[in-house]
Image 1 (cartoon, rainbow, N blue to C red):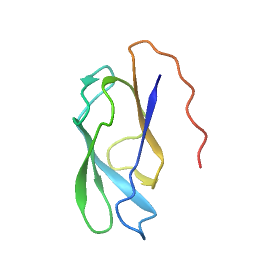
Image 2: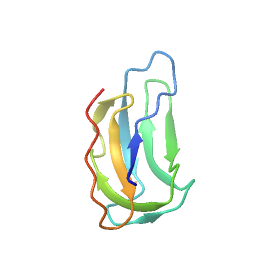
Image 3: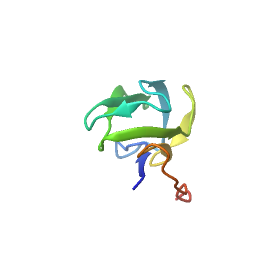
Image 4: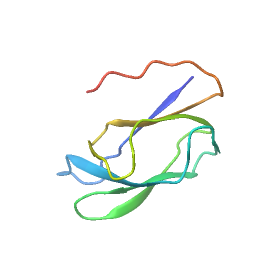
Length: 89
């Protein structure tokens, strides 16, 4: 089953964050705990780890893009797996 990675909320007042750098690309195999991307908030830059193992099926944003907190930013699953993106919250 596909796993939808969301932009995490690190601070109580943060509403948006910027994807600074992707460490993976579509087709890469990732392990649980592997860094996926770095994110910049108004106060810090930090790395986000994968919560699941699998294949990166899709990156939904580009480096430098500002997104709302909890936005879906990538999809991890099994190679060739079909999925439907969740609706925005």
